[in-house]
Length: 333
Ligand SMILES: C[S@@+](CC[C@H](N)C(=O)[O-])C[C@H]1O[C@@H](n2cnc3c(N)ncnc32)[C@H](O)[C@@H]1O
Image 1 (cartoon, rainbow, N blue to C red):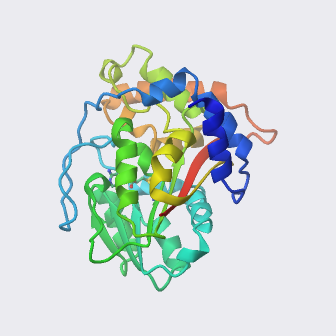
Image 2 (cartoon, rainbow, N blue to C red):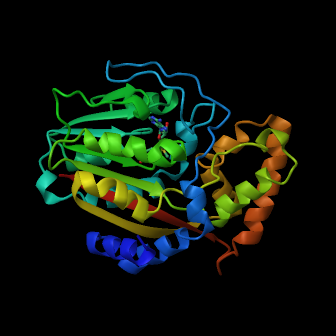
């Protein structure tokens, strides 16, 4: 199967419903991924060598699993929420594309619900649905429970999550989560979750698509500078997320509709430190969590210097963080 066949398949399956979405964006992106970067994405990826502790399993439909791409240290809900408005915007954009047929869902699961920001918008949009949030981070779940005490939040690993067969799920929703899964098992996990849905059920997710952005190129460059021996073999962040064509190929046999699009957000932030502060709550974690205080300071100084070089200040002294994101809304056949 050649590239153009994949591209036209994607073009046919993609509807123009997004904000800045275009089919050509997808095609250009797919062609870019058909370069050496794509073959990297398809090659088996060794497991990260830091394995987080098992989470407490709260319901019978979680089984313990040691594999995830999160770092050993727990997430910090307060660090993450420093940019709550910006981080929640794609969650709203994802929600807005859930098809009308699923407008009265009985049961919704917010997988990787974090501190409950995505769950809150689901609750507002679907006030009559039974909503469950699951997340593997104790700090995130604690914050979610504190913010939305009326919602059912469960601590658990999505990789071993099976919806209860006696309560069919209408919408499996995930905002900014699956990039944390090991690349080599990611598509299997996604298709397994998708396959649990009944016909007409919706699987909706969004992931950052910023592998080639200076924020992420710079963290890989600093980690690979040779100064941090602990990061020498770190595999995290070394390959991009699966391409639209790969996702389409995996999903389409199970779906009546697969809607894929990409949107770039342009977040105007106060200064370069704010960019660093943003990624400290997410993408930088697997790197800096492995370092001691002294090493972390050195890493952060080098990283900030690179960010200063990469992001030219705007006319008013602020900086613009370009943030591409990939969206998928699939309807089960
Ligand atoms: C970037 S936050 C997204 C939070 C929220 N959904 C939002 O819209 O902002 C990613 C979340 O995914 C969770 N996560 C990562 N890997 C997970 C896994 N294997 N199982 C469950 N949750 C996971 C993290 O703990 C974190 O809270």
